[in-house]
Amino acid sequence: MATLQQVDIGPQYLDEKEEEILKKIKARKQELGDKLLILGHHYQQEATFQFADMTGDSLKLAKYAAASRDKQYIVFCGVHFMAESADILTTDKQTVVLPDLRAGCPMADMADIEGVKWSWSELDKILDSNTIIPVTYVNSSAKIKAFVGEKGGSVCTSSNAERVLTWALEKGEKVFFFPDEHLGRNSAFALGIPDDEVVLWERGKLLGGNTEDQLKKAKVILWNGYCSVHMQFTEEHVRMWRQKDPEIKVIVHPECRFEVVRAADKYGSTEVIINTVSESPTGSHWAVGTEINLVNRLHKRHPDKEVHSLSPFQCLCSTMYRIKPAYLLWVLDNLAEGHVVNQITVDSETAKLAKIALDRMLEI
Ligand code: SF4
Image (cartoon, rainbow, N blue to C red):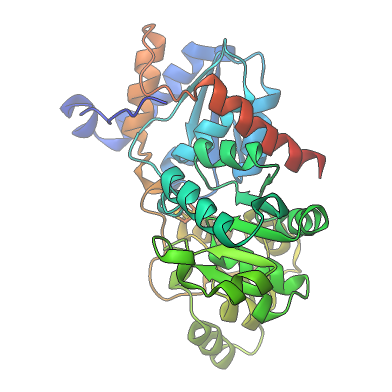
């Protein structure tokens, strides 16, 4: 996988008025017609999100990409790992483009392939690593997915993490879960795995900072990655809302800390959050613990309900936020003129192994 750097797109895009940019995007979309598919993740800012042909969370978007064999260009308004998954699941004739290469996921970057391989070899010193099943959250690089595929493990998402963990614990004795500690811990708790059988693997420390006995006893070993957006929600925010509004219902994403998830009324993936709020009766009050662009959209779409962010501070994903309309226009202008910029490609060996891990998840 070539590491590309985002180029400066120049003042003709960056200094242009937003309304002009939006008009030009509309025209380019029409010009590119059926050749083009724009995918938009729920965490995108509205100005970009409005141009998406299909919207969803990372799993839904990956499935849309896989099903859109007739589209030559797939422009992914999301982050790097999502565009990689789209490239893995599409054909060699299709081109996946990420409008701004700085749109990464800090949590995915917390599990780097060298660190994961080193940790695996550390574990192998004291355990039979054949009995360990690796599971990676979809928010991870193609290299990590490939490693997991090769070692007999699976990808999971926030909506099927409990099912995938159950499968992995039937297949092996232990699970090594990457990269989100919180999704892993919340899922292990939901399955009734006792606290002392869940340990944290601290990156870079010998045996992940654990004793041999702790690791031998553990059923689930959690990589200590986290999402800085969801980490900003606290138990105190839940208390504050309950004091302020006795009718409030709290719903959070499972990337939130354990105590926040326990204090909430409900937790679930982005899709679960959207469906729960949308299907709730008129007049419902919600405090939502996830990225602010999604919360604002829910607020706008449901004027008959009260929808607030769980936190009084702006919890936005600054890397997702990078896909600004100017960058979308820049890639569309180039595609219309026959140039591909910001193409995301995964090499064939990595793609083959990563696809095994993705396909396993779909089978489970
Ligand atoms: S919200 Fe968190 S997990 Fe999602 S892309 Fe942003 S940093 Fe990554």
